[in-house]
Image (tube, rainbow, N blue to C red; front, side, top):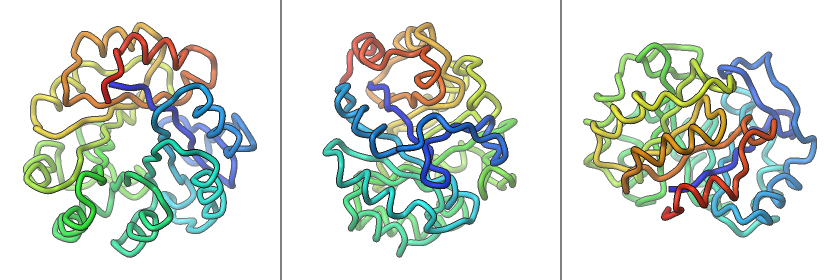
Length: 243
């Protein structure tokens, strides 16, 4: 398991939101390309990149920045936000993005994403953005009709790599990971799981270590890193990185 540092893009800047609310953005670095280089220099083995503008329906705002980030670092990138059809997904893969995280589109179009996973095996994650046990879609603004268990039933038999589980209630709150939610969802799927939302400090990393399984691929380090509460090198050492 690894700690994956996060860059959330809004207006071509590196920001963090609180509970995914668009109006709560706080700029942590106006130069996301340099931030990405820093993460690679620190020995991080994968970057978690989110296009917030696309997630909220503002397409192409960050396209050039995403291209620049891809060109500036050699480590794998997992990208989410606004991937609403197979054509967009294929363009990102052609750009050199290694893994895609698909949320609303995967919930609404199971057959199309299943087909996409056949063409790009082991390269797609389905986003499980959870609030009050509901999977949220459309920039976390709308409840879907599916539970995580239903998504697992649909996608566990496909060629997707796994799932990215985000606890919206705690996202950006520095309130601690919901380890019970993580453990429950691990027990319901045979695929890999990356978790995020609420990471607070090294105590959370120790908690993850206790429930570590080969399925638990990584934890997303966002605001906890930017405010100085998580040391990425120490976190990876503690987790015994095997991703």
